[in-house]
Length: 416
Image (cartoon, rainbow, N blue to C red; front, side, top):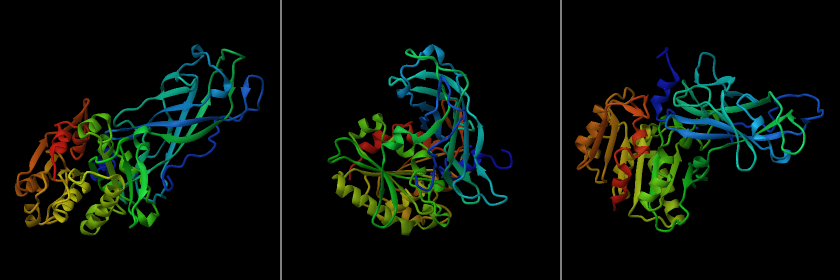
């Protein structure tokens, strides 16, 4: 997030660089925790569990596991403690790691259980220790040589240490557990789609969708596909950071009066060939606008790092399409976007960066673009800090994802 190369530093490089299920997370049908022979008080049938996850500012983490105990009958909560179950997690790359290469971060460890409780369905929820920058709970790994985040294969093993008392019947010890899917309600609210040209994207739509604005989120370099590895997952864009998710929150939806949020995923990385990617993104915007009756006067583009560059590129190619643009820590120099093209941008633009960004020089890029784009705004932070935790300076998209300077209200006021 500095040992010769730390996870924190590599994640800072891509925008996500993190900080992406067919090619990604593998959830085995049966993760067996113990193989004891069934006996009195021992359940031989597998108890299923799901992994509960939350996308933090620094990326998605598994924060709890929920055990489906409906068939066992009501559990006496007094018999449930943080020591009743052991939770072990193993995370490995879905792509083979070459000798000498590095991935941040695979892990194989016990997850501390911080609380154990019954939910309103009578299922057991084991809350796990997690925090920004804490290793051992993330769902993504960054492969250094490829510059990509990948969705890790997760295998969780549950072991019961002490019997559970039931309100009706004797105590029970569970012999087998079967792992289910990863559940992240914010991510799951975005549907899966593929454009006619083959570009994948995720889409959130409000309940009452007619004549609503459209917000286009363009990811950072680490969240693109790795086609040579047959890896194109349409997942990392929502799991690496809160960039797209922020606009689907209740607060953002209130400010925009309801809004569609679309997150295309590059087949590599936007900077590889922005002019080639621009019409592919435009096709997605056109298709979503047609199918959902989008308000064409309120289409906005926001992007971080590689996506910050791409948001600017889109406003040079489609000068009348967007009501506003928010490029975050984007790349424009040297001559990535010619000065003459920046000077011709007419889209209302608010640039965002942090002075301590050591991945993309804020002066040579964001400040330079601000000097050239007519009537543009710029916010320069000294550091990227949230809730007392300091992130890499490149991660200034966190402030936009959290609406730190009322970015969303400014966007919502803009019309074509």
